[in-house]
Image: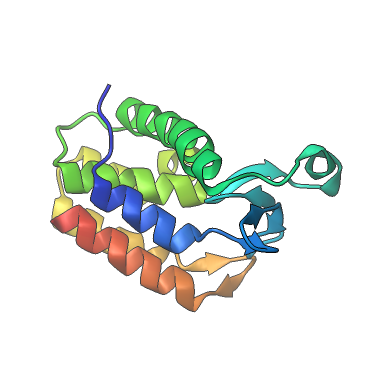
Length: 154
């Protein structure tokens, strides 16, 4: 199984952030569009009910268990959806994109179409179209997509 580069992992960790409270305790929080998450953007639920079962976790658990499991799922999804050879940068950028938006977004995107057509310059530009959350343009997403596009072209 192909894994993502450390550059891609660092990008994901930077943009997802690690929300700590009370010292080293990591607890569930709502992301920018109101989904309950924990650790580095690990999706828990769209409502509070499933969140109540989560105890605070450690940073090690957030990275070594939740993040690694999530990455594995998105790596498999990118491999399934992309049918052309990818560089490490291209693969990592697509995993980071999917980690943030979900594999369904990648599956139905012009980004995927451009990648599978081998139009890599055009594909890199497609990242910049995905800068809205909850109907609002977010500065953080503009910055994240620029970083993903740069990684894609590396």
